[in-house]
Image (cartoon, rainbow, N blue to C red; front, top):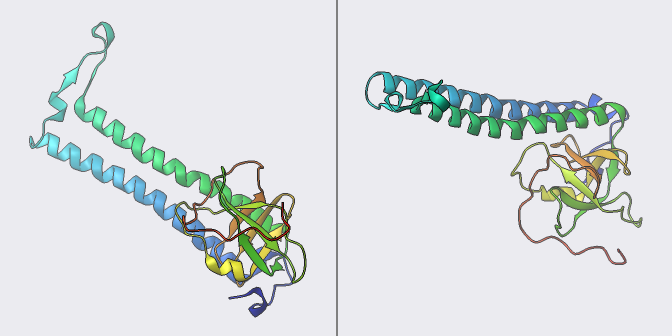
Length: 214
């Protein structure tokens, strides 16, 4: 799928139906993950508490006192607290992508899409994003090193981007990259700038850098 197969909308990017639908779908997936984590902890708490009260397990019988005999707790409360911390840690990983999606939306609401002839993925270095360069037009020069960052972790790099994409925003600041027609939006910034939550690409081999590049 190349960018030439889809007409670039003449309005700001977020007014495009496909773009808006892709952003909403991405936000919905993140929210579903958050809801699943909350539900998992509630189920774990209810099951553990029910088993303890029925005598199947006796975690609440294992108690200890606080310093100088004040306060104290039991093993049931400790296990539930640890489970809450674990679920909370995973939840934080999805709260950060929500902030990324907010930044993406601000860019899409302020800038139109522009066609990108090709996207070249560069060898990974010490960067949490996926390093790329853009070719805005045939026979033109490649942009400086940029870094794409998706909203969700452990997503594979969409190979179709290398055959054409849409870009919105500032090439010297924050922008958005997506497949033509309204694909999954990814935040893109000048490499080496402020680090935000990044999507991991697959660990396969990356293409060589363009000839004549630094």
